Length: 398
Ligand code: PLP
Image (tube, rainbow, N blue to C red; front, top):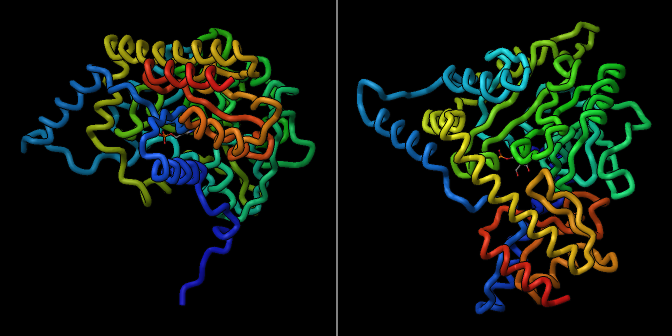
């Protein structure tokens, strides 16, 4: 009989959002009349922008004709998209990354979860607490030792350097779930720390498009030295409403290296290429043409308008919640608000109270890690009227 990977048994039984969905569903069954508004899961609500929709139509028409049909594409992504990324997401910010250092993905979840396959199981991995659960769970599945770095109001949700030896650290800024950011100075210190201590930084930039403040880096490669110590993950999910389309990209500079057991240094870029060629057949042609359209002049304008819409939601949410005396973090350069529960009520109690009294769904902070206890995460991805309605209801119960 096949035996189980025992590491999976150490995971909590429910992925956080599945657990929330189950509670909400149970509430719906007993309260079918309730008009529930979700400010919980980080999915978007606004439709794809016209430039993307047109690109999808064009690509579909190509697929419908024998002379332009495309089957399997390159595992690394089509050249047209890698080049568009290089020019429009990197070079325009003074970042020099080769097209062969860009790997198109089917969204950042797969790559942030899968990248650890390139690393030895004896690596010590640091994650922030609270954290996007994918990093922790993916490493726990392999049985790696995980070190947590608490992020609290006291340290402005920016972790201190670990006291103990680590090999890898996941950093995500703008942060999910706290909605906070890393200043250029602090990110530089992390890069210096990584170079000095031979630590690999896995930098999740899934929310970079939400940065409003010019002084906050949108990519770790804006920092000198990062090419030698950091891999960066991008996603079009929140940038352009691609949660259902599935596309993004991962940057693996050729200079980022790991060590072998006999002391050699080995570049991660060809290893990831090897891994992808075995396990990944590329994001779909349609998704990649859709992503390319984001970088056209009109695409940039349209995508920018949607981001402004969500950030206006965030502004209104922050203002309304602060007006009733709640402690609110994030929401200025990120679509997430990290809200202290009244009188430090436990996260799940507050979640259930908000659900039953206001019919509003939030995400219990403790689901992202122990330091999230006493907080909930609210997202600005809702429709404006529904978001306003949710705020009215929350104000009403206070
Ligand atoms: N990284 C972070 C921090 C996220 O919050 C998410 C999604 O919520 C992802 C990555 C993955 O997004 P996707 O797989 O849709 O690109």
